[in-house]
Amino acid sequence: MSDAIIFEHVRTPRGRGRPDGALHAVTPLSLAAQTLAELRRRAGFAPAEIADTGLGIVMPVGEQGCDLTRFALLEAGWGEGAAGYQLNRFCTSGLDTVRIAGALVASGQAEAAVGGGVESMSRVPIGSDGGAAYSDPALLARFPYVPNGLAADLMASLDGTTRAEADSYAAESQARAAAARAEGRFARALFPVRGPGGEVVLEEDEAIRPATTPETLAALPLAFEALGALGYDDLLRDRYPGLERVEHIHTGGNSSGIVDGACAVLVGSAAWGRANGLTPRVRIRACVSLASEPHLSLAGVVPATDAALARAGMQIGDIDLFEVNEAFAAVPLRYARHYGIDRDRINANGGAIALGHPLGATGAMLLGTLIDELERRDLGTGLVTLCAAAGQSTAMIVERFR
Image (cartoon, rainbow, N blue to C red):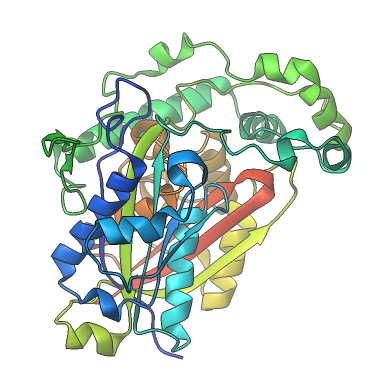
């Protein structure tokens, strides 16, 4: 087994995922192709040396269907021999493609591979893919699908997390992201996205709201209370009979934002990196994907973290920085409490509440943000983890070369 080393990562700025967002006119094919072209431009590798390329895509239908990755590689000029696949494991998809790239390299099946993701949420909305989990009565009778927002409210209810705590966390995420953008902490990873006419349409993350305060967030309506009243609250109380009621605390302001974006991560062996004159940035120490209780569908980040630490032979205190996806405020709040981690070490530059959550791309984006922040602070180890629908989660530990 050889080390799987991350040499480079790039991402688009995140654009608001709505018709008036800066990236709405840019197709998912173009977003992905521009990202892959930028990765190649920066690293200077020959595409024929990349064994495989995977992109996470959570809504793999319409413009994002038909193995978009293969055609994005062609559009990016990688040549007819560039192989690609798309992957959907809900919100962990982007990180899972990097996990697969790392496994190919570590096992000796490849000298180099690429992972990443793309999601144009303004053009292919959430739920566009349909599926048995939404529509098959026989399946739903045995394994009811719980929307993530309701699962987040269930988590908050079980933990005693209040609306005020969630709003305070969300305001902090906005402030951190605004400071990081102003100080150029995202600059290394970013590149300007061009529109259909070749014009630059977005150079910085668009969704951050610097003026956000706990007070402004407190005025927002609850997002999932009405959905709970349709019968989901009863279902959740049946699953957790000790729970008197589901306390709905999440709103559009303390939940992840809907955005468009893409990213790509280059993984290779040490020998391949040397041959291409590349500087190793981190090695992948461990990566684990698993599933847990599907009703409490966002709770997997803790068991995934425990499993990754065990695989790496590490303890939680060995990790310097964490990226825990801010799908909803209750998730990182639970994580910090469970492990007793100083909040400054979690999502140091804000998270998806402020920056947005382009579903298939977020995992690989968080990994890149973690690598950049480890380098900025001259720290050694980091862990990135995301929850996903139906109780799934992925966690990856990386270690810097110093």
